[in-house]
Structure formats: structure tokens, C-alpha cells
Image (tube, rainbow, N blue to C red; front, side):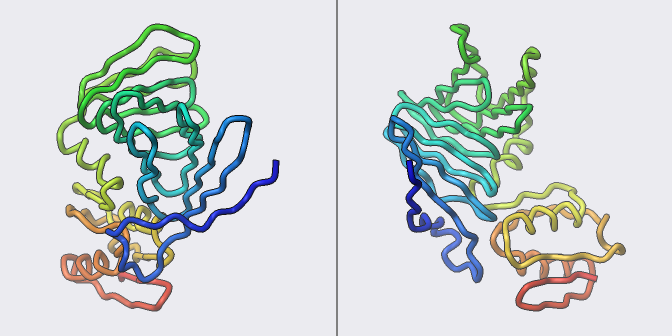
Amino acid sequence: AHTTPLPPLPRRRFFAAAAAPALLLATPKPQGKANSLYVTANGVSAPLHTAFGTITLDCYSQLKMGLESSRLVAGRCCVLGRTGMIVKAGNLIFAPQGRLLLSCTPTQVTATSISGSVRLRRHHSNEWWTPNAGSQISLTGNLPPEVRSLLPEEMATQNAWSLGLLEARDESISSIVGTFNRYNQRQLHVSAEFANRKLTGVFNLNQPEVFAMAAQTILGARLTQTPQTLFLY
């Protein structure tokens, strides 16, 4: 079957004023049933609507969406599901009725129940688990699942990207810069003098220049700007 490219999906209104919006690709791939493969670059997708809720993809993620279920192939997604929603990732099957964060790598699947409820099971198994809201479950290969309860601030930090935010809590400037650079074409750079300094705050993921000016004031640093870069030193 020949793939047919579609126009880029609209970005969130939250990012409508961005100077350099990231590219979002959506290419349907017919495979017997109606399936579409959604791929994001350095930007968060607009919500993808299904019959049973919505799925929002993080940057550099892939999702196969079908009529009866969807599969997170790689990266992260935020699911707002209701009765009937089925999402797969790795060897796990999820039936969320609420807000669920999923991440998937070739070796591990991690799910965080933000609100509501979620049921999950392994593929080819009839044993369902029902973690409480605020729980995070990780599954690596065939090992037993690891479950832990998150503190409210941990949940807020993990959920921030799906709201178009970066929430930093005593995080190094170099780490914050690395996150901004994943989501934006305009790249941030920081000198070694300030790289390990800590910062706490909530920032718009798509506005690295606002973060740079805030960091400049807080750290007492200098800021040099070009259309492509922002340099704190």
C-alpha cells in the first residue's frame, strides 16, 4: 500500500503565537483495518480525537491509531479516556477512564495515572491491575511490574509537558536548557559558569526566550541573542 501524506495537524492554540512552530507529521498507513501513523518532531501535537477520548503526543513520539485501539510505538503520550478507550504500549494493554501518561521505549513501558481510574493487563493475559490515581507502574521485559506512589509535585512535573509547560524544581540550568532544546528550533546555550546553577519555576515550553530573560535576571548573567540561538554566559 502506498502512503499518502496529509497536511500537518494544527498545533495547540497555546502555541499559536510561536515564532518557529515545530513540524508535526500525520501519515495514514492502511493495513487491513483503518490505521493511521502519527509522528511528532520537536513539538507537542494537538489532541488526536478518537471515539472514546483524546490522545496528545509528546515531541519525537509515534502513535498508531486504529478503529478499536491505539498503540504508542515510541515516546510519550497523554490519554484522556472514557469507557471504551483501549491503548497499547509494549506488552501492556490499558483501559483508562481519566487522565493517563504513557511512555514507551524498546525495553520499558511506564504508565502514570494522573486522575480517574485505569485498568491494565499484559498481552495474552486475563489478569487486570487497577492502580490508584497518583500511581506509576513500570514494566521492563518479563520482569514483575514496579509500582510506586507519586507525590503531588512529582505528578505536576510529569504532567506539565501535556499542558505545554516545563515545571522545574531545583533543576540545573543545563538540564532545563536540554528540555527547551528538544521542543524548539531556536536553541539555548549556557556557559559552564552557570550550567550547574539550580532554578525553580514554571515556563512555557515554546518560549525559550522568556526563560532566557528570566534566567538572565535571576542569575545575573549576560544574554546574547540571534534568530537561531540564545546564549547565557
